[in-house]
Length: 239
Image 1: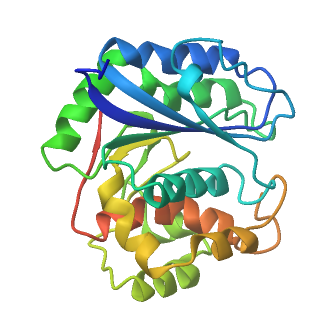
Image 2 (image 1 turned 180 degrees about the vertical axis):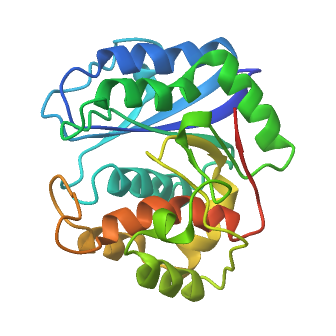
């Protein structure tokens, strides 16, 4: 029987094996939505398709460990387009731990708040009214309180080259840190029409990318995942 609930996509990248709690959180979205889950699973631990009602129809992939969570998120978007699935609001998530940071768990919890059902209900409503990105307050890296240098670090050359390739222009360099947020699949179509995503993925750095010696393509694209949207003169709202 066809669901009467609004369809949303959840794209989830997991690297660690303790992902069950995240899957429980994602399943909570089914209170309000018809959830199509797409997973890039690098954990080495199989996803139990019968774990809950959302995982039963999940599409699961396993890409090489490049670009941290970005390769999986871009690949899953590509699957949506290649299968000609209907455009809908999309939530990007991953099992962030940041082992190099002392507050890694706290940071993940703040970002993952966007997967809470009530947050999602409000976010999808705003997306459907034309907002480009909805994230948590903690995730927004805003030009209102950070300088251009602080926002871009050493990634400006890569970012501007890519934006020029996509014929996009930014009014400011605000972006969502941690790449967990709501948007809409229709807003990413220009990216996939002009860039070979599979080729891009092969050029992402492998492993735990920290930019200790030089600016990375990976962290440039952490920002570009937002800039592809705001470059279309769409806005970011933090809740």
